[in-house]
Image (cartoon, rainbow, N blue to C red; front, side, top):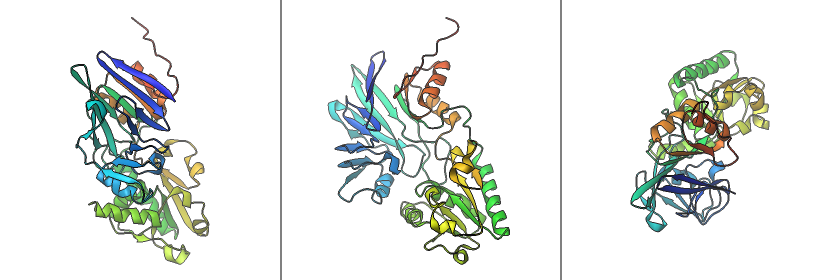
Length: 346
């Protein structure tokens, strides 16, 4: 456990990286811990942000999606975006859209320090550019910003989504013309629904794995207008002929897909920018389509929040913190040591 004290004038926050998540001891608030707690905010429903908590606080959409993924014994309290939730010592928090996947939230925590209100914003996973199947991110001003930095290096700048979609559609059409089955790899929650929405305009029939298909049904219940897709079920060459398959990366090496003699596989991920991405994912093509912020968006988030202090978590934490220091921000990696960048002139 690493405790770092954030201090700016009258504001003072203790921010701890513990149990794989964030803990604010002054207001007794856990956010995204990976080990079970009595009560915790879960910013979105991806498995890497979940644990067997007694009580989960989440946005309504995340609460609905969590019902597919956590024990029925878990108490889940849905907190609408913008609604205040009281904490100890007169503090409170509100959830605001993060733009990562449907229901994803940032946590804006407020507490009194002397006669002033001090604000801390925890981003969770986020992206600023719009998505077809997620709410638009709504950054808020805060004194302290605790932010994820998954793609926190300058080489991770994503191309325009429209251009990438054209490339993916072309990939699928070319595969079908060659008599092959185009297979798109994306996680069952979030990426699969985004791919389905983006590919709908192409007018090609789509098959999805059982988990992704079930989550699409929940998305529709929550008001998302998604194109039609059929459940994949048992895989045969005849059944998938003429269809696009959208499945999670874990399936690409499975017995069912391996049994397809004629297939063409592509992954949709921000990591497609890395050399060797096609070998890592075992595919033919890699397209840059991410539900995270790229480097430019990370910088933009800091500029929008205008914090006095920044704490980075996840990904390239040290590198991004040092980049922020060079730009004049007070920034430190919450976990691990960040070398202080000293100005060349006084």
